Amino acid sequence: MARIIRIFDTTLRDGEQAPGCSMNLGEKLEVAKQLQLLGVDILEAGFAIASPGDFAAVKEIARVIRGPVITSLARALPKDIDCAWQAIKSAEQPRIHTFIATSAIHLEHKLKMSETQVLEQIRAMVGYARKLCPDVEFSAEDASRSDPDFLCRAFETAIAAGARTINIPDTVGYALPHEFGALVRQVMQRVPNIDQAVVSVHCHNDLGLAVANTLAAVREGAGQVECTINGLGERAGNAALEEIIMSLRTRSEQFEADCNVDTRQLHATSRLVSTVTGVKVQPNKAIVGANAFAHEAGIHQHGILANRQTYEIMTPESIGLASSEMVLGKHSGRHAFEERLALLGLRVPETEVSVLFDSFKELADKKKLVSDRDIEALAMGRSLAVPEFHKLDSFVSNSGTKLDSSCTISLHSQDTGKRSEAALGDGPIDAAFKAIDRLTGREPVLQSLELNAVTGGTDAQGEARVRISFNNQVYNGHGISTDIVEAGIRAYLMAINALEHEEGVADAASISA
Ligand code: KIV
Ligand code: ZN
Image (tube, rainbow, N blue to C red; front, side, top):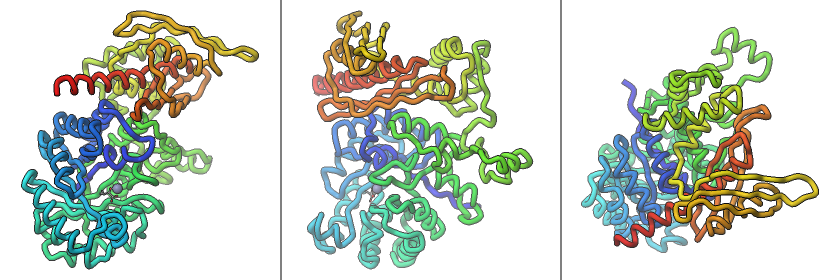
């Protein structure tokens, strides 16, 4: 029997901490539901004390998600641990994840504490967390640059105080695989009470070695790995979940280990995280990049046609890519459409399939052939929808050479009903966004705007991603349409609706407080 490696996903904590990756509550909840479907064992929902938004998201995920253990990060301080516990206590299986640094450089320059003081803090804070929650994980930040003797004493203290998982982070992505494997081996051999805890690893990718280090640790006996979808995370990111999982499955004979993840959900999960964060996956990214299963060279195509295994070590179906790119059209019925959604691993609640099917029919009217990528884009747009405080009624856009662009937009707003405004701008998008600012009375800062074609062809759907900031908060929007200006307008409106929604939630919370 292969031992089961526990998969600890930290996309919503370490991943979300990365610049430009912040998500709102609705987006985090969607990602959490997808991670539940993927079958991760532990879901780190956030760092509850970091902000009221983080706290609310962790709390909501703990309330809604069933299956995985739900954890929140907490520094080894009473106020952090209390806050984490308040956020996760309604989870089916809550875990407090507390940490303190153990390397000399962190002790001297950041914590300004001696080794004895750090050990005492670990003993006191792990013990404090254990009084609140039966499941406590302790991480030794910067473990890979710590003195191994001290690191072992830190883990021994944490386990004696009640930690049931001890985590060895390569916080700055400094370790090489043979060194990191040896460090895990030392911890397993030298910490006297190690049999009472699961050994976990958490590797950053500064030298591009996060997955290699993680796998080296698994070979030495680590029983939990911490990772993120698409390798998101601080700086160069964390170990990519999809790469670890597919390595474990494809080279199982090297690890004598397996995991509980449903690999057929990997593609859909990667797409969702990319859409939500606006961080694109590079085409040659292992497992989930657009080219990961594409065979371009003639000699490769010849081999693949003769026998797929000549050039394919994993099947596209194993990560949830449909075996054939089937194209639907306006004569395709609801049954075929629903079958395709299921084949693509797209989870759409029964109540929303009709609306999505209507959008598909509308698209098929404009664009004769609707591809899998089109269907994915439609489904992603649906899953990320926020309440429509302002709804697009119609727009007219005018642009060309030797004239200023103009746009007239008509919106239905919950407060004011239907109204129109026109604006001139430096290009059609600039004009459209200015008209929307006038109608909504908001002037957010546009941080980024990305326009892409979902597929090839001049009739392709345009996909727009917008990121705005307002009062130091960031909001994302996503829009699709065969008209790229309309896609931009929809994305911008979605970001403004997210802003209205979050402000509404915050106001309601302050009134009821
Ligand atoms: O990289 C790191 O050290 C961390 C810990 C807090 C687990 O993210
Ligand atoms: Zn980290």
